[in-house]
Structures are given as structure tokens and as C-alpha cells.
Length: 331
Image (cartoon, rainbow, N blue to C red; front, top):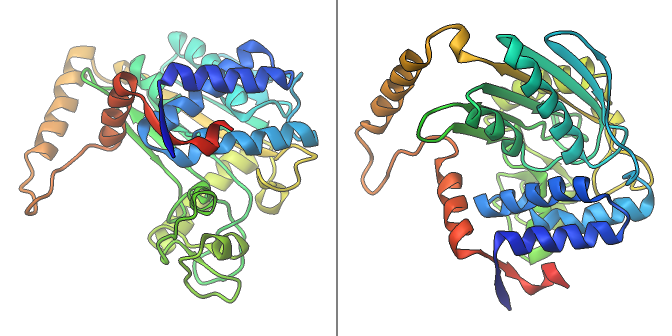
């Protein structure tokens, strides 16, 4: 049976569950807002679907509910943050807020964060920055679930990235895994009893499968073959190597090894476009780009959307009409 919840009700529910587990109000609010944001956009794999895994990690000791991130090294335009095994959302938000302060006195800033747990939808952070007028890049590594192109053994994570471009009307927001899909989508399918696209994953014998439970035991495929593999490797170099976080097999799954932190890492870059163009010229040029794309001759029955536009439309609808859930998510 399905029920409809407002976004505020989702936030309040998540906060109440987390605070009962000893999570502070300020940390719980960030996590709750991130999950509601993901579900509102239609990215259900990174929304309330993740709450049970977070609770398991709290109970197992993998999330330290008392820890707070700290800045371990910084200068005028860079920062190194240790999330200290708090919630991933709070660790990345700490880095985001820190870089948003630094870029007020610089043209380009960047920073890393290590000892991250699962941090939800990356667009949550980059869109914040774009709405303040900055171009934002965010890269995060994950536990190995994806075979390098030509292999059938998991060596790289889904290694997502997000890029947000400011625009007067609404930011252009790219948020994607370097695998064909984020593994959370497969866990979501398993939880809700749905089959998956067989192009998403291989079973333990290296064969395509539409069974999410077999996919979980097997490996994910790279997005666009060698191209996705290449992107995943670059994300690993930035988010894993440069951040000082775990690299490949040193990063653990959100669903396993719940007695310790995931050891994931992130890397963020902010650029002020006003360092290159005055604000009016930038807006005119980004509008020119968007108009040119929108004026494309389309295939029959198709429409051209900007990256993130469908999700932004979903979010607007969710804010007024609420979000439909299966009751199991609130039991």
C-alpha cells in the first residue's frame, strides 16, 4: 500500500529516527534534508531507501554519532577535511560550507574530505553552490563493485560525480555514477521486488542478469564501456588518492563491514565564473548555450531536457504535492 508524505514530513521522520539513535539535531537535519531532496528529485536510490542501512551502521559502530568533521590543513584556496566517520552528508556539507566561504576571496578553490560514509546524492551539494553563483565539481569514490573495462572482477566503485553550472533561471546539474547505474538502484530494486535492466550488471559467472539479488553478488558494468571506466579511474585518483581516503578495496560497502567507517573520500572544486566574465556577459552566454540546445530539431515524440531539469521539475512537484512511498519505508 502506498502513502503520500510531504517533504517536511519526510525530514521530520528521518530526524526523529536519527535523534533516537543519539545523532545531534544539526547532523540529523542535514542527513534528512539530503534524503528528502533525493526522493523529491526522483532519485529514490539515494533517499529514504538508505535510512535502514544508516541505522545498521550506527548500531554496528560504523557511523560515529558523536564525531564532527575537522579541517586538518588549509590555506587561502584549499582545504583538507577529515569527516571522522560521521555521516557522509555532514562531512561533505562541512567541506561545501568551508569552500563557499573561501571562494568569496578567491576565483578558484578546492578541497578534499576523507573518512566519509555514504553521502547521498552529490547534486545536493553542487546545486547549493550553483545557486550561489559558482560552478561546482564534486567527485566521490566508493567500494569496488564495477569491473574495469575488459575484466569481470570488481576493482572500482560506482565512483559518482556531479557538476553544477549556475544559471539565472535554474542551475544545470549533472549527477551521475561512472557505472551504468548507481548500485543503490539495484539495492532499491531488490528491496521493492523489481527486476533490473540486464545491461546494468553481471552475475558471478560474468553473465548479464535482470535479478537484482544476483547483481548484488556479481559486478556492475561501466557506463559506456571504456569511457565510464576511464572516468571511474579519474574519480578514484581525486577522491581516493588525493584526499588521503581509502583506494579501491580499502573502501567498504555501506551494507557490509558495518562495524567500521567506509573510508571513502571526496574532492570538490568551486569556480567563480565572474573571474572570467562579468556577470551580465556570463548570463547572456549561458543563455545562448541553453537556447541553442533547446532549439534542437527533436525526434518524434521527444523533448530535449537540460541535465538535472527533469529532477528539478520533480522536486518542484514534490514540494507542492508530496512524495509517494510504500508504507514499508515508515515501519
